[in-house]
Image 1 (cartoon, rainbow, N blue to C red):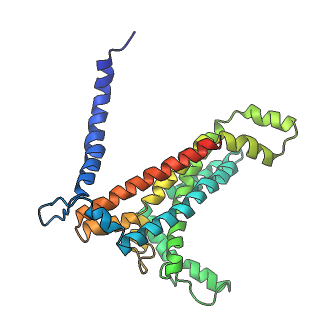
Image 2 (image 1 turned 120 degrees about the vertical axis):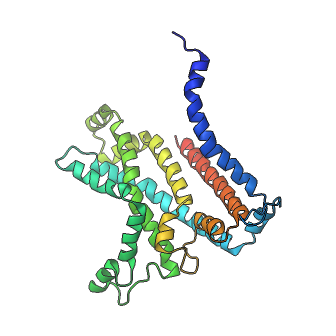
Length: 286
């Protein structure tokens, strides 16, 4: 029995209304505000491209852009590759494997704010990590993980990787369990080693999962905020200030909504570009 198109439209309409009201309208409104000097105090005045021109002469924006791109370049490859090995490790039928899967996934369901607070304590000069380094003789002085501009951003990156590994591991685990078992059985009969099976069977058939992880981790790296806000507040010396944190400061500290909206539009464009690049690169490797 054929369904009338109006019936299908009726089912789609509530979702479309919600998406339009909660996603599309705010996005379009933000783009419009980015062309004004709206600041919650004075009436908004149309300023054209002034906010966008000001961005590229603003050292704070350029520094935040550099930090965000560095975050993307360092964190995304780790979150694409490392969870594959974790998924291969836990994709086994051995006693207690569910416990290890749950343990690796636990950081995902832990509040990121709480995780950042715990890691901030671990990173302190008198924290657990420095205590271990001093006790083992690996260093003579406490390391300023969050107070040294050269270390702070990478310390925050480590928290992002730690909190996201389990999530992407589950995606890969689902992909691994969807690979037909007979392919490995044939390879074993032919005398193919386990490493060659991983290289020529597992990785190629995991490409759809790798594409999903690459795009999602790129988006996550571009919009990192909670770790920075809780652990460093953008310091020291703006070494950990990202685009989203700068957007927050511009909007809710300085109340420059037009300027903050321009930052948001640039961030949206960059996120879309890097997502398309990831998808294109993965398609070319097929």
